[in-house]
Length: 366
Image (spheres, rainbow, N blue to C red):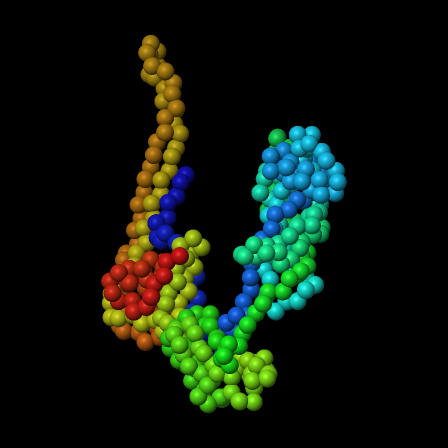
């Protein structure tokens, strides 16, 4: 029997943001300091010791092995090499601002060939380059794989991704990236969530502590002048600024994720007066196999198997409820619950309200 339940295309859970009157957040949690950013590093290398699970002799892996051996004075033709115990990999890492030579970084290693697993492998020394093509770190070490793969052509089992591994502290920083956070006696803060109102509030909060020192340049940038007495200790001044609390503005917004069926709504949502009808339709389709036989003593016809299909439709009585203007998200939820709406149905109802012009909030579909 096949059952088709037609109620909503999505399953969801409605999560409500806290009241906008809640305590403020630290500037440190809302912004980043311009210039104090991470940088991405990438490199190419070889992983050895894979016990027959390495690449199946691709040209680039064989050539990389030959080049590596040549560096150690071993001249072997590439055609004479095998890569079944070796895998060509890409290495990625992020280097924070202000790190010094000798600092260790975590690295992620992933195969680029057809190696089955990196379990038990060792990464040979590989340089990590920045976007400018310069080497900033060198990676090497034993891999930690969070999955496994085993079996043969008759059957296999796999957990997680055995072709991706990590090395905790597997890279050593060899070159420091120049970083400048104070320019012409000014520090610039960048909002993680750009918003004009939040930028203005942040500048006002800083000015309440350090008079006439902050200015909101745009929805993202707040420029702060380092006051007298702090010129020689800008780090201490930034620490004081980061500890200031401010209440960021939260726009009226509903996020709908169709893949996971999740709905997230902020507390500023408003719904204009409207009417909502909600019903549930269930269609049941049952297939039954039957035997068809010819009449007794009949000289024609053959016994055959036929399928009989029974279809039933059940529709609950629709309820038509008028929703008055609702000032809070709690009343919005209460109004929808009054007509028996489940979280899985709220997603479709919010979409219909937005199309009707009753939902006074930004609706974002993921």
